Length: 195
Image (cartoon, rainbow, N blue to C red; front, side, top):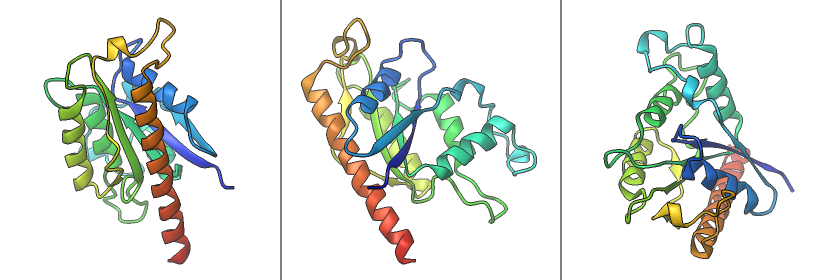
């Protein structure tokens, strides 16, 4: 069986972030032969600059991020909710990932199998941030898992002191979305092989 390489990004820079912990939980509960690599360089991504958005002028960290997303079989995003939307640092990274002005290098997010999850201390979890992120991914033509939705609400009650996800419902939903992501990855492989 082919191992599926999933690249994961947490939209939070905070130490001890529940969204980063959610990605670590995803590593623990992956289905079958899925490997999840968690990106730790979001803080280093500079503000998007159209004048620099080409292979020769992009910052090295951006070219590296684009390469890693292009090479991944799937993408897993964990987003907190800031002011009813997506954190600016996450949206900024997506802007760098969305383009191919040369028409030769490929758009990393185009048709990329992607799952969106999120955790927040509020009673609605990250529902509005996830909705906003799904709208962004409609613009990038990203192939996003529709269901199940993983909205870890009152997230401070869902992890233990060691950072383990302990809520059984959240674990089940996380396993479900990873299985759905694997299905999208399998369908994408079949589509590319048939092309």
